[in-house]
Image 1 (cartoon, rainbow, N blue to C red):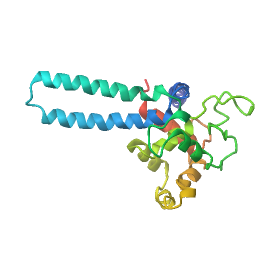
Image 2 (cartoon, helix red, strand yellow):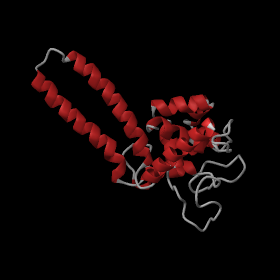
Image 3 (tube, rainbow, N blue to C red):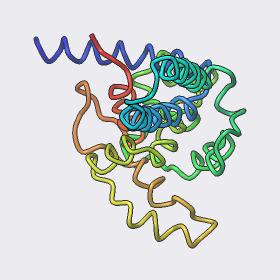
Image 4 (cartoon, helix red, strand yellow):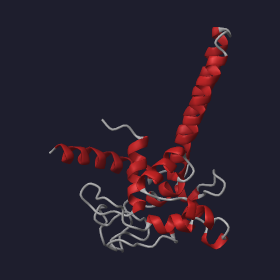
Length: 213
């Protein structure tokens, strides 16, 4: 019963995040979180260095810092994923090109357009229907390779990035090893279901970047 309750809370958190991300930019959401984390570490360090400065100066700098953080946190809401050009080499079009390299190597019930399991989304196997969460799963997985939390998640899930580094010399197969891995079945069931690595890394990223009550 406890496991079922945990699954229910996690699914609710993931679905809520997916609902929001489909209206914004999943790439900026992930990379913006990393920017905020790095900026916060820098802020704490600078605050220690400025300990002897006047209180008025600290207050003004703190206010400006807060404004920058707010802007970074909201950037992902300003455009859709496919319109994103904020990150060199990681645009919405780059993510879509990457998506086309993924091949389903599981039970073949994953949508080729959005890579959400058809067992999980409301659209199911009705291919004439619009995807429930388009441009969310793959952009999350694509952006994960550029963040500390994403890289750690990939390693914990069993991805060996040495093959991906070797692909960098081949422009036609850039990130090919990662794409192939994303299309494989994750080693464990999640919420009692079989998912691809792509779906699971998106789920795990969301659960790490949002607070679950």
